[in-house]
Image (cartoon, rainbow, N blue to C red; front, side, top):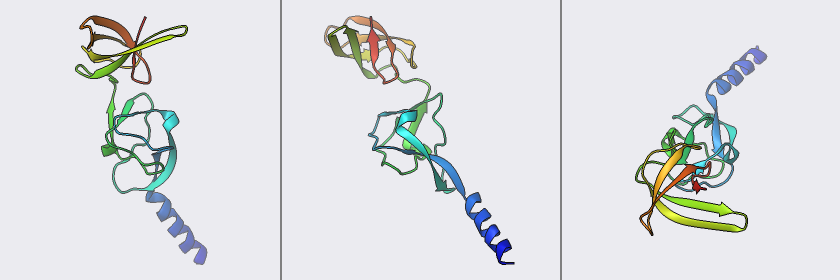
Length: 139
């Protein structure tokens, strides 16, 4: 009889829990969250939590604490990493040379897609590709 009661309690506990993502480190507001930044943990089924970020661009809506389950309200999930009107960092890299300037995105773009950016210092239009860390790389 005791084993039946014990197994019922254990089943109930497991049924009330859910696998969720938690940050491996503190994540700051507007930071892009990658699979390397999170791990899987178990949380109670109270609220709506992020269970996967695979194939999506996930940006922190607020600062996230290490080890605390990520709620859906804590993040912005979007296929576009850069949106029209965003201020972005444009990078030009060659061998030992790295130049970075600020620019205004002229269109929406996801990772690997082309984006037009207006250089804020010279007002010239630049064409580049969005990198996985949210920068625009020009050739």
